[in-house]
Image 1 (tube, rainbow, N blue to C red):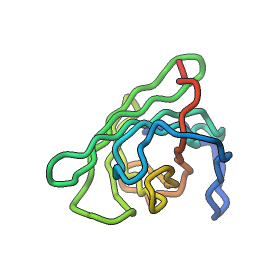
Image 2: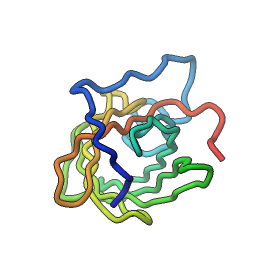
Image 3: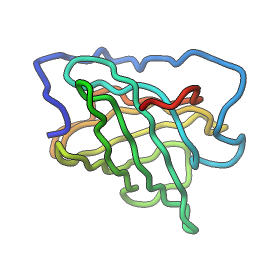
Length: 137
């Protein structure tokens, strides 16, 4: 499993990120870039950094990392199927297992809001990203 879930349920809405002045993701560049935000793990919203690349066919792949009780958990992302709009389905993989991540980018690809779930479970846990300030270590 991706996280240790302790019976915490997520409210239906996604959490907004604070607005700020500039971004490491270029306007109009598509989903490629580095996004900083939060993901829900073990009943807590944790700082997460998600990096994405786009291949010649427009498929997303990437990596992510988040603070996991004092250590950094690193994982990979790959797009499932094909899509060319702002809603994408990705597969995540890390030391806890694998599962799905469904993300919706803003039209300028500056931010995304998403929901993730373990393999076989409906995505229902927050994962979002936007402008990166200081990288997490």
